[in-house]
Figure (cartoon, rainbow, N blue to C red):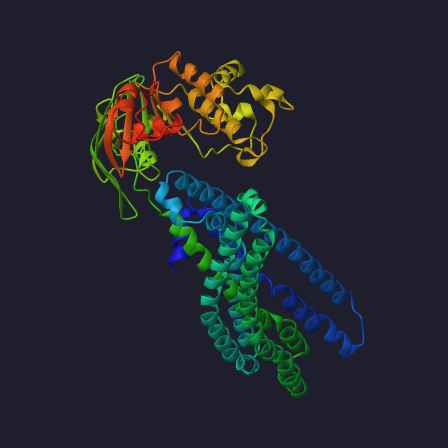
Amino acid sequence: MFQLRWVWTRMAGTHKRYVFALFSTAVLAVMSLGNSMITANIMDTVFYPLQETGTVTPEAVRQLGWLVALLIGFVLVRTSFGYLSVMTYENCSQKLIYQLRRDLYKNMQEQDQAFYGQYRTGDLMTRLTGDMDMIRHAVNWVIRQLISCTVMFFTAIITFFVADWQMALTMLAITPFIFALTLMFSKRVHPLYVDLREKLSSLNTAAQENISGNRVVKAFAREDYEIARFDEKNREYKEANKTASLLWLKFCPYVETLSQSLSVVVLLVGGAFLISGRITIGTFAMFNGLTWTLVDPMRMLGMHLNDLQRFFASSNKIIELYYAKSTITTRPDAVKPKGRVKGEVKFQDVSLKLHGTEVLKHVNLDIHPGETVAVMGPTGSGKTSLVNMIPRFTDASSGKVLVDGTPVRMYDLKSLRSSIGIATQDVFLFSDSVDGNIAYGDSKMPEEEVKRFAKMADVDFAEKLAEGFDTVIGERGTGLSGGQKQRIALARALAVRPSILILDDTTSAVDLETEKYIQEQLANLDFPCTKIIVAQRISTTKRADKIVILEDGRVTQVGTHQELSQAPGYYREVFLLQNGQEAGSERQVV
């Protein structure tokens, strides 16, 4: 029952209201017997004497009127109280889910890259939607029904024993068999709902990946393959759902048969007791009218336990996500820089392991404030991993990364990252306007400022769009070319006026003329900025103050374009290759 205790803890602030709702459920369950008891009283005190005497007296009419008014009043009170109870449940459950979903989303925002490598997007979406709704359903409906069924069942038993203990024992003789079947069902259905939950997660993941990668699917004409793949996941979910449902259907006929047999018991045993004079016609009517108070709880108990097992499966997933902790967090004694960061970056004997593989090995590098540093190297040499350690997307396994002489681990994460502008080759744009994407780091940025930074990044095409800068671009920039998306991402990075600007192959998809214009703009920024550029084009790196060559996770060369283009090594090979020459050519290259 840990899951129920955990949910109760998360309901802080609504405990009193929810306790009232639980209490009202118990009261309403007791009151559900009222109609039949008042009706039984009418039959014994009004109708039966009238049948015996055959005379309608004013006293009988008054008593009938009073009892009918009592019945109507009782129904109105019970209905009003029931409405208040339902609204209280609804308010408490909605507040719980709102706060819980908010906390989960906040926790997800604080996670590092390892978290998103471990959890699939479709699975996370399932947790934030279906699993959350299952918790709300349990708080708002399942618990209420379990309390109602339990209280109603035992209240009916007490009422039956007070009326006639032999009749009560006769009816109760069947109930142990029903409870045994229900408990057997509950134990067998739990693992089925755990499996069902996993199949739903896989189905959502397959759909999400297919939608996100729709262009690739179309490019390779693999629509039929993806449809077949989705059908397989859909079929697995259908089979898991059917298995869980059919299990209850196997038990259902036995439970229904035993439950409905109570009506037969009332007619046979109650009829015999009525003929013998042991019970009155009113008592017989009460037993007959309240049979449902034993039948319904026993019949519905299996369904409610069914839902409860689904709640346990879903809540386990929510709890797991709720307590997931990032390895990259802000320390209690974190440093919050006063004023603007200068932009000095140092790597001191830095090594990095990712998934058991050593990506960077003993890197030492000094980057001075305002300096432009280019990072080059073969694919997989660790270029992106190197720059990712500056904003602490990953932490060094050993050694230190320092900004302005302070280890990045000592910085307040928000303060550190707000000082850094990042644009990558794999651009992510939001389903927002061009203006909204550029001003993402500062939503209050004036339109003139947005256009100024857009001009720096050569986002001239925005004026030609249907609604200019107010044009809403599709998810991930659908409808824009790779170069256009990169330019918007660059403008977004510049718009926060960063002290450190990291460009990870940001201009790889733009033409040389546009690249030259962007480089000129970056060289003449109106704010101090240290620029770290990961690139493969010599045209991008040759203007840098310093060029760093990474090979197999190690810094193998550091120098200017002039120095490295003349010295043997990776940079000279790339330089010669991009100038149409072989690495071993004797021809002098200018």
